[in-house]
Length: 124
Image (cartoon, rainbow, N blue to C red; front, side, top):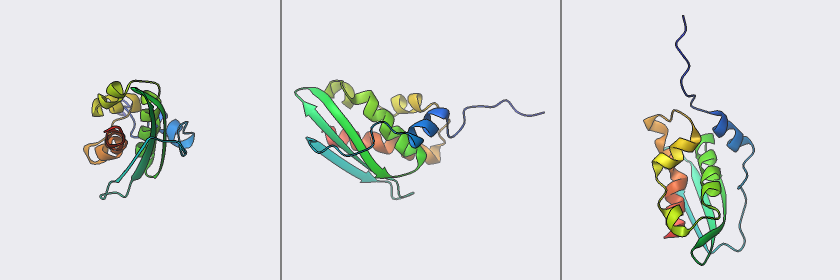
């Protein structure tokens, strides 16, 4: 007898966003850029943000990272583009984990949240 299947480490959302990211690329007219690396695994993510007034007008990312990290960056870009800076700053790890729809183990939590900390740095 097999155990019931729980959420997979690489959910359909992670696989789709890793294979076909919608916000990967550079943003030549970014008003702010931030980059960070996770020294434990080598994930590196850079986010470029264009802010107009109090709104996040555009977000793009580049990086060399695992599927979880890159999917997280792509989803964060989608979640923040067009919102207010205050709304983007208020996002937390729970928001990211909810949209990834995966069972992220504690050892991989930083993979999922690295783009969030980079976004917060770009917006500060």
